[in-house]
Every structure is written in structure tokens, then in C-alpha cells.
Length: 265
Image (cartoon, rainbow, N blue to C red; front, side, top):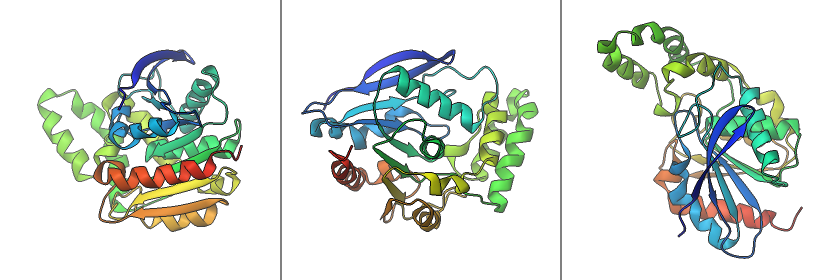
């Protein structure tokens, strides 16, 4: 299995780091992967790189502020992340890509798909965020994100901050200090009204034990009912990172969906 090539590109004045894995068989489609909040691209590799042997070109983007990409110079909104991904795709000359987004990356993918600036061959939402949730844990995360920055100025409070953030829910939504305002913007924006506008064939892929307060498995039925051309698959006995916990089933399900799209566009 090949090792992806690491590259950098400037998009909207932002240095973006990404990974490129070329197709090792007759080329089919290009698949663009977007990670979740607080995550990075290499987490995808173990469950997705074998797709290159089936003819798929793979691109993994480190979103601004994460992985090896530059931190944003100012707070960003969901539209900013969507625009950066769109400009990245267009700058590389990728026609009709397939977007695969996990959690926060799924939310970005939904915004891109619903705006229809480019035509997508397909869309895959993996434990995606985006639906409104007003649980105690969710509100606690927002409050912590808004108030924790002053605490960070006291170095001895680092451990307390880490404990508070983990108490509030998932590591996927730990807000880095420099992304505090961005985090609040993103978490408050919901996209359920955009779902019926998605025209791309969509796979909703979820961990059956996902109890993240932003992405509970109960959201699957909502996404499935609101996205016109959607199918859903729940991987049992795994959580929010289903592609890490059950890489074989994740890969086989994703491959089956990609193969069903081949030749349609």
C-alpha cells in the first residue's frame, strides 16, 4: 500500500497541507476526505488507502487550524471552510469529486453539496454534525469554549482546562485556544434546512454506539429522511470514529458505494 505524498498549496491566502494518493489501477473518481474538529488527515489512511488499488485517486485535506495546515488569521465560519475546500478542489482542477466528511468535515461537505457551486459525483457523511442539539453537554461545550481562553493564560490551569473539555463530551470537539471563536461560530450553525437541496447520491455511514452529543446515532434517520438520494449504513458496536474502530466494514461499505457511482457521471 502506497504512502501518500505530502503537499502544500495556498488557498485564499491560507497555507493548506494535504496528502495525495494516486490511483494504482485504471482511474475512476477522485475522492476528497475532510476530517473532524481537532483531528487531521492521517487518521483516514488505514481504512481508505486500499481504495487506490481499485482505481480511486485520494486527497486528504488538513483543514485550517488542524494537522499541518496554517492556523486561520481570524475566526472562521462554516462558509469560510466550505469556500476554502471549494477553492482547493477548483485550483487542483478536480472535476466532479466525491466528498467524504467526518463529523465537522461532514458539516462542511453538506454546505458545499447544498450550494451546488460544483457538481459532486457523490457525498459520504460519516458521523456528521450539523443538526441542532440542545443537551446539557452541548451547552456546556459552548460555555467552556467561550470562557476558557482567559484561564489558559495561567499555565498551571492547563490540566484543569483539559479535564473540563473532556468532561463536556468528545475529543473531536475540543476547542484549541486560537480557534475558540471559530468553534463557537461553527457549533451554533445548523444546516438541517440545507439537506433537501442536496442532489448528489449520498451515503450516511455511522457508528451504532456514537453517543457524541453533536452526532448521536439517532441523527441517521433525520439525515436519511431529508436528503433526497440517500442510503444509510450503521456499523454496530463502534462509536464516533467508526472508520478507526471497524476499518474493514467501513472500507467495504465505502467501496461498495463508490463502485455504485462509477460511470454515472
